[in-house]
Length: 230
Image (cartoon, rainbow, N blue to C red):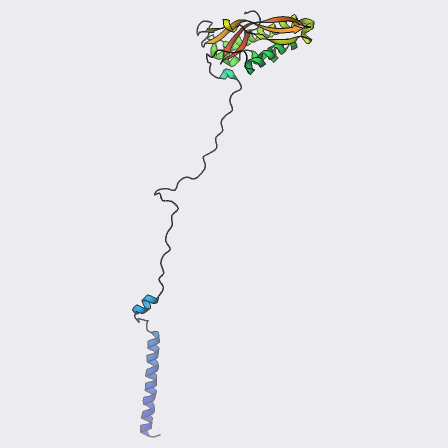
Protein backbone atom coordinates (compact mmCIF):
# COMPACT_ATOMS: atom_id res chain seq x y z
CA UNK A 1 0.00 0.00 0.00
CA UNK A 2 1.30 3.38 -0.91
CA UNK A 3 1.70 6.20 1.62
CA UNK A 4 -1.31 8.32 0.60
CA UNK A 5 -3.65 5.36 1.00
CA UNK A 6 -2.32 4.67 4.47
CA UNK A 7 -2.89 8.27 5.48
CA UNK A 8 -6.47 8.18 4.31
CA UNK A 9 -7.12 4.95 6.21
CA UNK A 10 -5.72 6.41 9.40
CA UNK A 11 -7.85 9.52 9.02
CA UNK A 12 -11.02 7.44 8.59
CA UNK A 13 -10.21 5.37 11.68
CA UNK A 14 -9.60 8.55 13.68
CA UNK A 15 -12.90 10.07 12.58
CA UNK A 16 -14.85 6.91 13.48
CA UNK A 17 -13.23 6.82 16.92
CA UNK A 18 -14.09 10.48 17.51
CA UNK A 19 -17.69 9.86 16.55
CA UNK A 20 -17.95 6.92 18.92
CA UNK A 21 -16.49 8.99 21.76
CA UNK A 22 -18.99 11.77 21.02
CA UNK A 23 -21.92 9.40 21.10
CA UNK A 24 -20.73 7.96 24.40
CA UNK A 25 -20.42 11.41 25.98
CA UNK A 26 -23.90 12.37 24.83
CA UNK A 27 -25.39 9.21 26.31
CA UNK A 28 -23.74 9.78 29.69
CA UNK A 29 -24.57 13.51 30.00
CA UNK A 30 -27.64 14.57 32.23
CA UNK A 31 -30.86 15.52 30.45
CA UNK A 32 -30.96 19.31 30.78
CA UNK A 33 -33.41 19.71 27.95
CA UNK A 34 -35.92 22.47 28.97
CA UNK A 35 -39.63 21.60 29.04
CA UNK A 36 -41.61 23.54 26.57
CA UNK A 37 -44.86 25.45 27.51
CA UNK A 38 -46.86 23.03 25.42
CA UNK A 39 -45.39 20.04 27.24
CA UNK A 40 -46.09 21.69 30.64
CA UNK A 41 -49.74 22.29 29.76
CA UNK A 42 -50.19 18.75 28.49
CA UNK A 43 -48.71 17.09 31.60
CA UNK A 44 -51.34 15.97 34.18
CA UNK A 45 -51.36 17.85 37.50
CA UNK A 46 -51.18 15.82 40.71
CA UNK A 47 -52.88 17.54 43.66
CA UNK A 48 -53.22 16.47 47.30
CA UNK A 49 -56.57 15.01 48.29
CA UNK A 50 -58.67 17.52 50.32
CA UNK A 51 -58.98 16.88 54.07
CA UNK A 52 -62.57 16.26 55.22
CA UNK A 53 -64.01 16.81 58.72
CA UNK A 54 -67.04 15.30 60.38
CA UNK A 55 -67.95 18.29 62.54
CA UNK A 56 -68.38 22.02 62.06
CA UNK A 57 -67.25 22.78 65.60
CA UNK A 58 -63.73 23.64 66.62
CA UNK A 59 -62.34 21.89 69.64
CA UNK A 60 -62.12 18.41 71.06
CA UNK A 61 -64.38 15.74 69.64
CA UNK A 62 -67.63 15.32 71.60
CA UNK A 63 -67.89 12.44 74.03
CA UNK A 64 -70.27 9.93 72.46
CA UNK A 65 -69.97 7.28 75.16
CA UNK A 66 -73.20 6.44 76.98
CA UNK A 67 -73.36 7.38 80.67
CA UNK A 68 -73.10 4.54 83.15
CA UNK A 69 -76.46 3.01 83.94
CA UNK A 70 -77.82 3.87 87.38
CA UNK A 71 -80.38 1.98 89.38
CA UNK A 72 -82.83 3.39 91.81
CA UNK A 73 -83.30 1.38 94.90
CA UNK A 74 -86.75 0.13 95.45
CA UNK A 75 -88.86 1.90 98.01
CA UNK A 76 -88.64 0.56 101.55
CA UNK A 77 -91.42 -1.83 102.66
CA UNK A 78 -91.09 -0.50 106.23
CA UNK A 79 -93.15 2.71 106.54
CA UNK A 80 -91.49 3.44 109.88
CA UNK A 81 -88.27 4.34 108.07
CA UNK A 82 -90.05 7.24 106.36
CA UNK A 83 -90.75 10.61 108.00
CA UNK A 84 -93.93 11.19 109.97
CA UNK A 85 -96.81 13.28 108.63
CA UNK A 86 -99.86 14.80 110.31
CA UNK A 87 -102.30 13.34 107.77
CA UNK A 88 -105.45 12.22 109.56
CA UNK A 89 -106.03 8.47 109.04
CA UNK A 90 -109.12 7.00 107.45
CA UNK A 91 -110.78 3.60 107.88
CA UNK A 92 -111.71 2.66 104.33
CA UNK A 93 -108.36 2.35 102.56
CA UNK A 94 -107.00 -1.06 101.60
CA UNK A 95 -104.08 -0.92 104.07
CA UNK A 96 -106.35 -0.35 107.05
CA UNK A 97 -108.93 -2.93 105.98
CA UNK A 98 -106.22 -5.57 105.48
CA UNK A 99 -104.61 -4.70 108.82
CA UNK A 100 -107.86 -5.09 110.72
CA UNK A 101 -108.38 -8.47 109.08
CA UNK A 102 -104.84 -9.49 110.15
CA UNK A 103 -105.66 -8.54 113.73
CA UNK A 104 -108.83 -10.65 113.69
CA UNK A 105 -106.96 -13.61 112.20
CA UNK A 106 -104.30 -13.33 114.91
CA UNK A 107 -106.96 -13.57 117.61
CA UNK A 108 -108.79 -16.47 116.00
CA UNK A 109 -105.56 -18.39 115.35
CA UNK A 110 -104.09 -17.44 118.75
CA UNK A 111 -100.94 -16.27 116.93
CA UNK A 112 -99.77 -12.68 117.70
CA UNK A 113 -97.28 -12.69 114.81
CA UNK A 114 -100.17 -12.72 112.32
CA UNK A 115 -101.34 -9.36 113.66
CA UNK A 116 -97.92 -7.67 113.73
CA UNK A 117 -98.45 -5.88 110.35
CA UNK A 118 -101.28 -3.94 112.03
CA UNK A 119 -99.19 -3.10 115.10
CA UNK A 120 -97.35 0.23 115.31
CA UNK A 121 -93.96 -0.23 113.54
CA UNK A 122 -90.87 -0.42 115.72
CA UNK A 123 -88.89 1.83 113.40
CA UNK A 124 -91.62 4.49 113.75
CA UNK A 125 -91.66 4.09 117.54
CA UNK A 126 -87.92 4.79 117.62
CA UNK A 127 -88.57 8.06 115.81
CA UNK A 128 -91.57 9.08 117.92
CA UNK A 129 -90.62 8.40 121.51
CA UNK A 130 -88.40 10.70 123.59
CA UNK A 131 -87.39 8.11 126.19
CA UNK A 132 -84.06 6.56 127.14
CA UNK A 133 -84.60 3.13 125.59
CA UNK A 134 -87.41 3.16 123.03
CA UNK A 135 -86.26 -0.14 121.46
CA UNK A 136 -86.36 -1.95 124.80
CA UNK A 137 -89.69 -0.39 125.72
CA UNK A 138 -91.19 -1.41 122.41
CA UNK A 139 -90.10 -5.03 122.64
CA UNK A 140 -90.38 -5.67 126.37
CA UNK A 141 -93.58 -3.75 127.03
CA UNK A 142 -95.65 -3.06 123.90
CA UNK A 143 -94.99 -6.25 121.92
CA UNK A 144 -95.04 -8.42 125.05
CA UNK A 145 -98.39 -6.94 126.10
CA UNK A 146 -99.78 -7.33 122.59
CA UNK A 147 -98.96 -11.03 122.64
CA UNK A 148 -100.65 -11.49 125.98
CA UNK A 149 -103.74 -9.59 124.82
CA UNK A 150 -104.09 -11.71 121.68
CA UNK A 151 -104.04 -14.87 123.81
CA UNK A 152 -106.61 -13.35 126.20
CA UNK A 153 -109.04 -12.44 123.41
CA UNK A 154 -108.62 -15.85 121.80
CA UNK A 155 -109.51 -17.44 125.10
CA UNK A 156 -112.55 -15.14 125.28
CA UNK A 157 -113.77 -16.62 121.99
CA UNK A 158 -113.41 -20.07 123.50
CA UNK A 159 -115.07 -22.87 121.59
CA UNK A 160 -116.56 -20.32 119.17
CA UNK A 161 -113.15 -19.37 117.71
CA UNK A 162 -113.55 -21.79 114.84
CA UNK A 163 -117.05 -20.64 113.86
CA UNK A 164 -116.80 -16.91 114.61
CA UNK A 165 -117.27 -14.70 111.55
CA UNK A 166 -115.51 -11.35 111.30
CA UNK A 167 -117.96 -8.52 110.55
CA UNK A 168 -115.79 -5.40 110.63
CA UNK A 169 -114.11 -2.78 112.79
CA UNK A 170 -115.52 0.41 114.26
CA UNK A 171 -113.23 3.37 114.93
CA UNK A 172 -114.50 6.46 116.77
CA UNK A 173 -112.83 8.82 114.33
CA UNK A 174 -114.83 11.78 115.62
CA UNK A 175 -112.97 11.42 118.93
CA UNK A 176 -109.49 11.19 117.39
CA UNK A 177 -107.02 13.83 118.61
CA UNK A 178 -103.70 15.03 117.26
CA UNK A 179 -101.14 14.47 120.04
CA UNK A 180 -98.52 17.19 119.94
CA UNK A 181 -94.79 16.68 120.72
CA UNK A 182 -94.12 16.49 124.46
CA UNK A 183 -97.64 15.43 125.49
CA UNK A 184 -96.92 11.70 125.82
CA UNK A 185 -93.11 11.55 125.97
CA UNK A 186 -93.12 11.93 122.19
CA UNK A 187 -90.84 13.86 119.86
CA UNK A 188 -93.23 13.80 116.92
CA UNK A 189 -96.99 14.32 116.57
CA UNK A 190 -99.48 11.54 115.87
CA UNK A 191 -103.21 10.96 115.83
CA UNK A 192 -104.68 8.86 118.65
CA UNK A 193 -108.09 7.32 119.16
CA UNK A 194 -109.54 5.18 121.97
CA UNK A 195 -112.51 2.78 122.01
CA UNK A 196 -112.15 0.86 118.74
CA UNK A 197 -114.04 -2.45 118.53
CA UNK A 198 -113.88 -5.55 116.36
CA UNK A 199 -117.31 -6.90 115.40
CA UNK A 200 -118.00 -10.58 114.84
CA UNK A 201 -120.87 -13.02 114.87
CA UNK A 202 -121.43 -16.57 116.06
CA UNK A 203 -124.52 -18.45 114.87
CA UNK A 204 -126.28 -15.20 113.98
CA UNK A 205 -125.50 -13.43 117.25
CA UNK A 206 -123.28 -10.30 117.22
CA UNK A 207 -120.38 -9.65 119.58
CA UNK A 208 -117.45 -7.27 119.91
CA UNK A 209 -113.84 -7.35 121.06
CA UNK A 210 -112.09 -4.21 122.35
CA UNK A 211 -109.06 -2.51 120.79
CA UNK A 212 -107.99 0.03 123.38
CA UNK A 213 -105.78 2.45 121.46
CA UNK A 214 -104.78 3.21 117.88
CA UNK A 215 -102.18 5.78 116.89
CA UNK A 216 -101.15 6.95 113.45
CA UNK A 217 -98.06 6.90 111.31
CA UNK A 218 -98.06 8.68 107.96
CA UNK A 219 -101.85 8.75 107.75
CA UNK A 220 -102.47 5.10 108.72
CA UNK A 221 -103.92 3.71 111.95
CA UNK A 222 -101.97 1.07 113.91
CA UNK A 223 -102.70 -0.78 117.15
CA UNK A 224 -100.49 0.30 120.03
CA UNK A 225 -102.55 -1.06 122.96
CA UNK A 226 -104.89 -3.99 122.26
CA UNK A 227 -105.87 -4.51 125.92
CA UNK A 228 -105.47 -2.28 128.94
CA UNK A 229 -102.70 0.34 128.78
CA UNK A 230 -99.84 -0.77 131.01
